[in-house]
Image 1 (cartoon, helix red, strand yellow):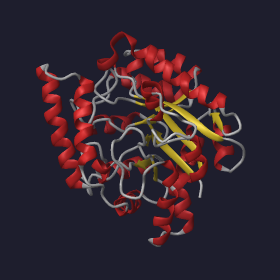
Image 2 (cartoon, rainbow, N blue to C red):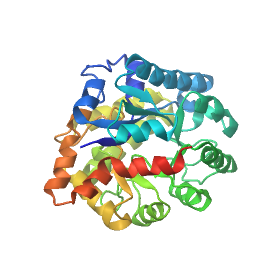
Image 3 (cartoon, rainbow, N blue to C red):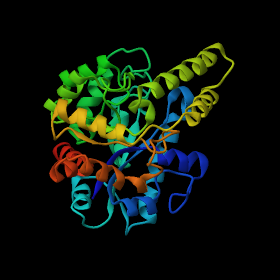
Length: 348
């Protein structure tokens, strides 16, 4: 089976922690793991927050984008930085190198100016997650809950003109509906699950899944247990609220709070892989066969469901779907064809 994975945070581990991308065991996504699993397209996110990095946010983000390009340049027989759909289409057809798609996870590096995206587009970025935390473009699910701003509308319009995929994962419900009303092309929720199965605010309600599907969009099912299992989500949310109260009080930094939450999450029992099947089936029932893919969030999470330890284990997802009786054509759509279709429709 071929796979199109719509979200990983591996570049952050490479840049911040010196993770070995080639064959190392300190990252979920490695080159050897991608080859073993049959990953034909992978979205590499660059996560750079203005609240964390201040005036360095754009420079740090660009460094991560350039690191993505350097990974491809170091392994030209295996990876190609996708600047048009030609590279993605060839990869998903099983021809040549796997496609690497650079993304911004949060438009903070643009500092409120949509035209600042030109530099990142020229460097190869082809997907933009509007906001990870509240910024000048959009409110977020775990933030204020406010909608798309006028700058956000301009950014969506500019991305569509350039053939860049717009991503509403992390966006608030209000911002989601604003994008639905404003966007002229299909858009994605690259790494979000089903709220009716796990009531985490980062997940999509059924009417949101339905609306996204009606516009030709795709939701990438996230492998993070906090978006899969209600009990896990409740404990993670409680730990996050406690940790970030200390940030507000000044007794913890942002990074210290993140480490505290990660420690709690890592101590929780891993839920069964069958929950991934539950979310996929539900999203298909609500939105149809063409709106569901995989957006694992690997290297951006501190826990994964039992049976998934790295990207090399993705074939177990296809096996799970097949064993549950899903038709081979639908399994292919979920594993890679739905996201490939969307990128073909959006990219220039």
